[in-house]
Image 1 (tube, rainbow, N blue to C red):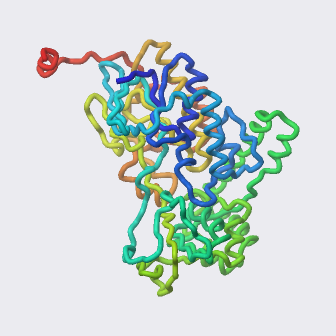
Image 2: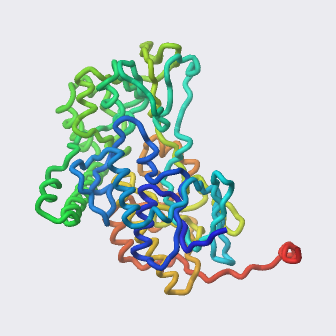
Image 3: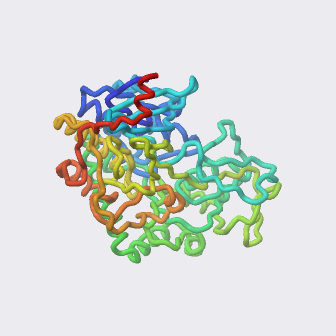
Length: 494
């Protein structure tokens, strides 16, 4: 058994950022990062599909402490992976990572103020203890995506797989490809495969709001020429934060106007009949995350005829392809399921406090980063309506502030306690399929602060930096005296 002041779970974008903040703001703390896979990078190492890229600009998806200096604001996966790994290497964070350590259980003991984490490793279970845990394992399962089985799938004679498990040696040149799904993954894959495939068809049950933007930011490139890297980065970052917040708030306040504006933008890319058939969703803009199309690549593939869209339901698969409910048959050599992620809370680990495990659905979110009655644990969860790292950076700053405050008070336990039980519960911000599918596993949130995730960067930034930690909800406690039972005496005698 090994002990650390802080254990970080996950060595992806969030975990490396958490370690940097910990080293910077809590320099005396010992820590280790437990990473379930064998490499740094999380999402950016896991996904290997063609064209893998960010769906947010790198001036906000990048860390606040490390400038993004590449020309492309909408970056490809390999460049993002290099950025994360360079951050870890230069700060010496990579020396603290325990690879192939998948955390499966975490239990807190109020009498010792310690977490005990059990990790699966190739050599068997490994046990760690820590005073504080930072869960930075992302929000979805790396092993178990949303992978629906279609009738007749076993009879298909071609190649079929989920995009999360892309075959390394796949050759799609001159092949007929069908991509099932219409989210960010599908919209990324289609135009890249369409360059070499015989044809690529995207099958969607319903349309998604899409918007094009240049992959390069001319203003950022100009500033990089005249300002130091960090200064240029900060200017562009703050501009993009303000612009993104304004667009989101405007869309929520006036959805009809936002829908019309986006349709006008689509009209510059595609014919009206194509927009009517395949690009006019039933939901309002920003009720689901906007799907980004850099440099209009997806629209250009549709216009060029190398890619097409079918808005329909799948009836069944057969030996040669897919039959749709409309009666149309799509011949296919390769079928790619871009059917989405499976949301996972706290890295999928079982969590208990003093021997009691309470379902996530009976916990309530505190400040978007802690859970009611779970001490000394912060989970890093990004924004849905903005770049993930904006929230991740703020969360890690709060974690460091809290750890330092616990030390200053001499209180080894900090726990949010929900005294009110009559607060109105809030429905999820987004209606996306992956959010709706996860409702039976997600913690609750209310309409009232601090028991909610605001999804508002400017508000969160002020709150995390300026609001007192002692807010009447977060309680600082000494160790609890353990009441010895007969079984304890028997165990001690042995």
